[in-house]
Image (cartoon, rainbow, N blue to C red; front, side, top):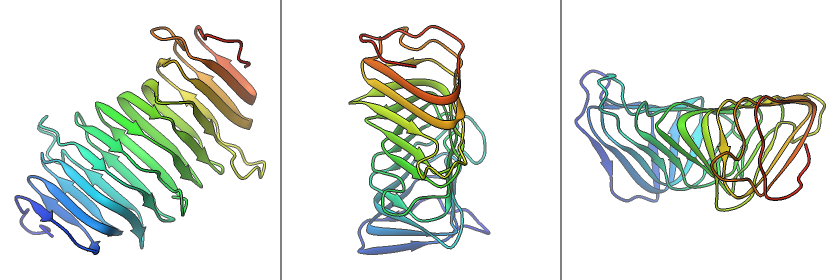
Length: 239
């Protein structure tokens, strides 16, 4: 859709099943369906919001969503209102817009990797992959989130807030001895417990933890733990 000449917008108002390949628009992409298949799909818009209302499956190959293709500073938001499943990679780029994953990612079928390249705000619930999880945003909210990967590195580039409940990150969920590292490059705040498990990998926090709002507790497990700034909690967790 829009491969030769971009459409101004694409809307699917309702369907039991929606199948999409590549989509290119200057404005909004709004897809509503009980189930939505992205078939090796690149979904791109110059400035519009991109919304998937319904469960999303990744089929065939890697999927990507970009909401500021023309890089003009007018950036659309990207929202997935439900689950995302499928043994493929998903990459999302909202530039100065927001990214919201409201449902679990990889809960039924693990994704191979999840990447958020840029956003002003990223909201995450549970994420499960076999490989890398790399999230970049000015602010990143972990909403009672369990972030797990079998073997990949997990990287949060930006300030992280813990919202709703306890958050956890596990970079060797399958306990096979091939362990990813866990890196937080920015601050971490929120009155919740944070549990990190890198097994034989490395945990690194590069900025203050609990500076604005003390964490409830921290529990860190790894072969190497690099704490490069202060940690403040309301209780005696362990590191």
